Amino acid sequence: MLLISNNLKMNLINLIILSKVSALVAQMAPCQPQEFLFVPVGGKAKISCVSNGTLDKLFRISWYRRTWRVGENPELILDWGEVTKGHKYNCTHTERSSSLEINNVKEEDSGTYYCTYYTFTSLIFSNGTTLIAGDSFTAKSSVQLMVPPSSPLPNTSVQLACVASAVGYMVHISWNLSGTPQKGRVVAMEEPGGTLTFLSYITVPRDTWYQGASLSCQVRFNSSSATAVHGQATTQVPTRWSYFAKILVPSYFHSKEVQGH
Image (cartoon, rainbow, N blue to C red):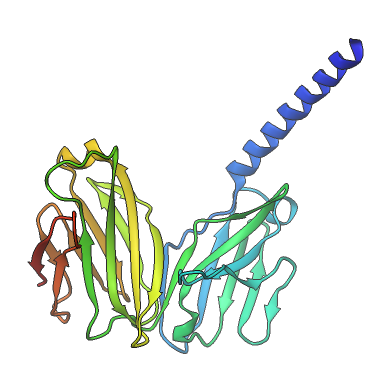
C-alpha cells in the first residue's frame, strides 16, 4: 500500500512539473510578428520568428512553407541546425529570434512560412507569415463572399466563406466579424488555366450571425487589397480594379450582387 502511495506521489509530482514546464513553454513559444510580407520579384524576403525565452535552449527551430493546395503537405525549407541551403535560403539566429532569408525571390516562392519547434514529442507550428512575391492579381481576379440565407437555419452554427478566384500565386485573406478579427481555414485549388482559387472559411454560432453581425473579408493580392463587406452590401476595391464582386453561392445560400468601386 505504501508503494502505491509513493508511486501516486511521484506521478503527481511529475504531472505538476510537466504542467509548469508546458505553461513556461507556452509563454515563451516563438511567434511571427509579420502577418504578411510583400516582396518584388528578384528581391530578398526576411521573415522573423521571435520568443520571450532563449531559443537555442528551449526550442529547436525549423522552417516550413505551405501553399494551401488541396492534398499538399507542409514543405520543409530549413531543418533544425541548418543555416543555409544553396544560394536560396539562409537562417540567422540570435538568443531570442530566428530569421529566414529568401534570396532572389520568385513568384513560386509565395506561400505561408512557419517557424516550427519541438515540445516533448510534438512539432508545433507558429502563427505563420504569408509571403506574396510580385502581384497575384490578374485581369480575371474576383472576390466572392458566401453567407447563409436571411431565414435562420436549424444548425447551431453557420459557415461563412470568402473566395478569391483567378489568382496568380498567393493571397492573404483576413476576416472581421463585428469588429473582431477571425482566423479562417484556407484551401487552394488549381484551375485549368493555371490560376488558383483560394477559399477561406470560418464557423460562427448561429445566434451571433442572425442577430445582425457584420462581416468583411479582406483579400490582399499585393500591397493593395480588396474588401468584401456583407453588412453594407458593398465591395471596396482600388480604382484600378474594375470588376463585380458577388455575394453568391448555390442552393441554400443567399445570393446578392454588389458592384466594386
